[in-house]
Structure formats: structure tokens, C-alpha cells
Length: 196
Length: 187
Image 1 (tube, rainbow over the protein chains, first blue to last red):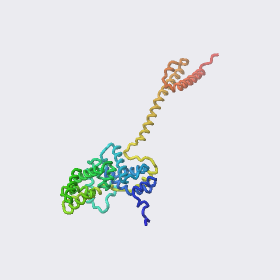
Image 2: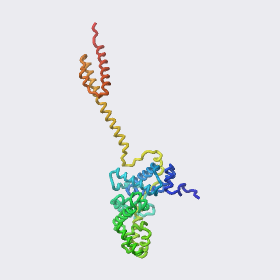
Image 3: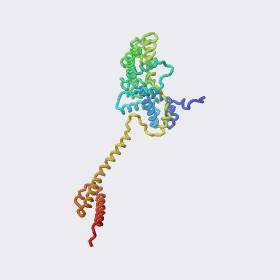
């Protein structure tokens, strides 16, 4: 019985994208539902700005829709998606004349609109997470863009190494070493602070 | 990084399941992500079953991974597909904040260039007309003393000379008619 289930729930990503290529907006909505959080997290990890992450996420999906006619079923969809996301991030950096992360933080007033913490976390845990966030972003700021992207896509998003290699347009071993360098720097920086 | 891991892998290949702590710790970040090849994974797992310190190292790597996943997640993810769908149907290019809209700027630059060109062309015509008006005024105050040389010296663009000269002739003809009417008739 499939009653009550979304009509595209059983279709794989590439099948949905092929349907979207033919103009099926429902299929594209299903893809959006599957991946928009991952894309949001990716941009948030790169730029630390929640509003900007939303803008860039919408821009990514909008561009994929506009260029859908070019899609060919030649690889994993996440690689295709994050390839667009990375290009949009690079365009954004270039447009602002900066090669590093943008560094815009959420204002206190804006932050009040968010409800980031589930009710299960205590204030002490929230304070600990806020401190960790500051330190992790500070370390990420020091990393080259390739290492940061490799780290975010592998460690945070959990994408396979070969998919990340497609996104970064480099060999799998290069992705592996970039991600390991980023992980080591993070561990060294956080070791004393969080007993890692 | 690759050299260190290469040495660890070579050691694993040589010694089978027997690896020392240093070799295993080089592989732990990769092991924590699940990126270790199957043959090495078994060797590392075998070591971790017996070594408390290396297992602690693995726990720390996993804790760091969980912490990063928590901390680097968007604070308030919201599904905005309806808004996206509007833009998909509108078909207008979306402008990101901070992005330079080169097409719009090119349009503005072209408009400015057109205005400058028009001003450049019109300025001599305006000046020429001003000269003509001065001549006409002089003609009004001193009838019969039209300075035809000055009229020829008025600088106007070649393509508009005919228009200006024609206008001047009409003006002069009108003024002469006016002067004729003002002169007393002698019988």
C-alpha cells in the first residue's frame, strides 16, 4: 500500500531529476525536500550566516531548474547538486572580492528570531555548543577553501569521497588528504578546550 | 598525510592483523569516517578490540564528528519551495545580495553614452541658433545692416547647417517683413 505516501517517495534522485528535466515541478519539489537542508548546512558551514545560506540555497535550486535541460544521468545527484552549490559560493566570494569565508555573523536581533535549540538541551549545553561553534568556525576560517569544502561535505554532510571528488574536480585521494588535514587542524585546535 | 597513511597501510599489509598504536592512530580519522579500505579496517578493528587508548582516540574522533555535525547545521531550516516555485515560474534572473548586475549596469552605461552623444550633437545647434538670434536682434535694432559674413561664420554641424540656415532665412524674412511694416509709407 502506498496510500498517504508522497508520489515520488520511491523514485531515486536521478529519476526525479530526469522527471524535473522534462518540466515536472512535483519531482523537483521532492528533490528540494530531500536536499535543501543539506545545502543550507553546506552554505551555513561556509559562511556562518543563516540568511545568506537561505539565499544561496534558493539560488542553487533555481539555477538547477533553469539549467535542467543540460542534466545527464552521468553521476550521483548530490555531486551534481553540490557542484552547483560550490560554483555559486565561488561566485559569491568573487562578487565580494574575497576569497575566504564571508564571516557575516547573525546579529543579536536576528538571532532572536531563530529557534535553534530543541527544548531538550539545557542552557549549560547550549553555552557549551555556542563556545564550540565559535572555536570551530575560527578554525575553519583558517583553512583553504578546498579543505573546508572537503571537510563539510564528508564529515558534516556524509557524502562519499568519490562524490566529493566530482564536486571538487580532483582525485579521490586528494579529497581524502584535504579532509584529513582539516580534521587534524580541528582536533589540534579543540583538543585542550573540549578534552578531545 | 598520505605518506603517513601509506606507511601505516604498508605496515598493515606486512604484518597482517598486527599493527601498533602509532600506525593505528594515523588511520583513526579515516576509520571514524568509514573511509578505511576493508582490509585495513579489519586490522584496525582487531587492534581497537584490544587497545583501550586507541579506542579512546577513536571515541574522541567520533565525538568531534558529532560536535561538528551539530554545530555546523543551519539553525532554522525552513522549506521554502513555494517561494522558489514563484521564481521558477517568473523566469526572471534572481539577484543575490551583493552580486553586481552587469547587464543592468551595461544598459545604464549605454543610456548615458546616448545622452552624451545627443548633448554633443545638440550643443552646436543650440549655439548656432543663439548666434542667429543675436544677428536677428541686431537686425531689429539696426535695420538694413545684416552681417552676412557673421552669418556664414556661425559654426554648426554639416548635417544640421541646412536646417539652421533655413531657419535663419525664415527668421530674417519675417523680421524684414516686420520692419517693412513699421517703416512709414512715403507717398
